[in-house]
Image (cartoon, rainbow, N blue to C red; front, side, top):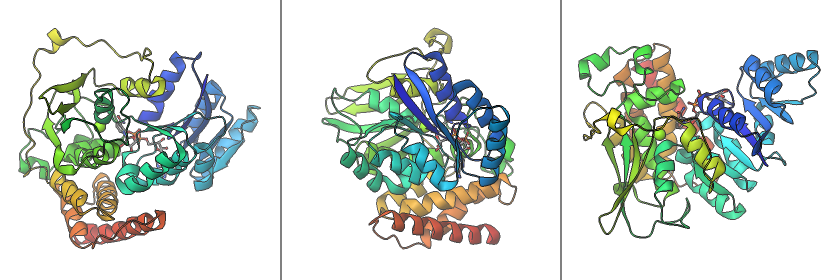
Length: 391
Ligand code: NAD
Ligand code: MG
């Protein structure tokens, strides 16, 4: 029986993780849950899964949850704030920790789970983008097992030679090919994209996901972040990570080896597959995902990404090449710009403009420790907020 802690249990990945746990009560037990502020959702989860403890990042929401739990005689302790998230991440009864908080807000708790030597199910790609070096070092030091949840990286993980784990170089690997759906604006003109609304940007054609990552998919910054994520997970330089647009999202990514073999993982675009894969690894368990009907799918198409309408890909590659704190400010600027776009303060192409301005205005420094990451994150957000108001 594996104890599971979920950071971000009320989000899209969190809910899919609970769905897998619900299907396998003989294998998994929820020991701790954490989320930002949706206390009513967390209350429902407490009723169903009876965790040992829960945490809410928002102190006000923590009070509401505590009162509701008391009223129902559910004696589950409620933690709050950043300290609460950390306690969930290192809960002594958690064998596995699902890191599914969105954005750099998940950085410290993800790092803490790695340092505690947990099986780390990593969905929070921004943690790896901001602190890849620190996170991979923590995994190595503690002997934690890092398993990628992002569908592309989980696909690559499934195509690795036996015994090769994330954090190791891949022997005989020529290049990695990340597939991208192209998002909702794949066939839109630049003029149409300039007038795109938040609702249009979050309407992903294949995947159902949280708002932030949906906007990232529309701008293709999601793929940019995933290039950086792949560099850390598979010890490869940015130039060997290619991106191909594949609108059907059936092939989740590929590894090309020196002999010309290209290994791919296929499946429905349903996050329960990579989540079940990582939770049960090396076993295989049912996930509730529909079988793939290739005859019904008919065509699998591929095209190169358009660098003109999707400048975020180039910006992410630039940050990856510069290294140090450059990916931290890239991520911070993106988070600020996406939030501004969702609030109607910035048009869609403005997201890339803001990130570009912030990246050009930042002199990357080496990352010695967590303080350097947090300071670069703060600077990136400040520069981005200024760029938004000037845009
Ligand atoms: P979401 O917006 O649906 O959920 C985010 C979760 O994080 C919620 O539970 C929320 O309460 C919590 N959260 C947000 N801010 C917080 C804060 N400051 N402190 C504590 N908790 C906070 O997002 P999602 O789509 O589930 O994505 C989560 C992560 O997984 C992201 O990093 C995303 O890039 C990654 N990911 C998601 C998908 C997907 O299909 N949704 C696929 C691949 C990777
Ligand atoms: Mg992905």
